[in-house]
Length: 77
Image (cartoon, rainbow, N blue to C red; front, side, top):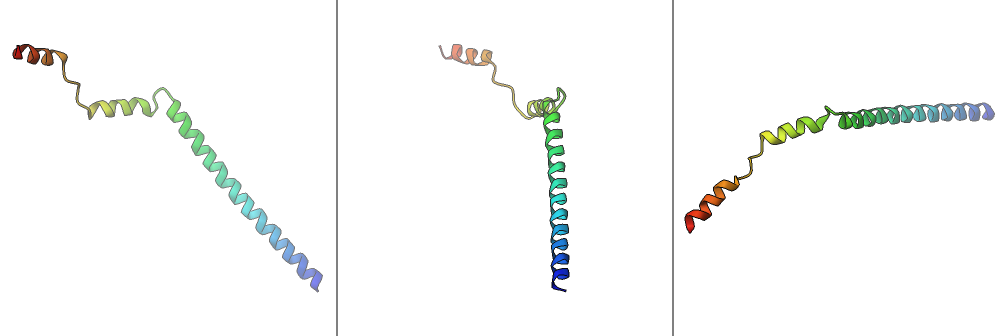
């Protein structure tokens, strides 16, 4: 009877180990797929760089013109 109990315990542990390993593998696979998709999207010519530049230009002011600065310095003389 003790031997049967040990075999059943061993089988349950082995099954438990297998299920944990499969879950870990599935999670690692999904993480890898998301990582590769992100890297491809960032590297793509129409990736986020393009729309980030457009967005950045919409919220930044143009630099002051050099002409206005020269006029101000000429007015002081």
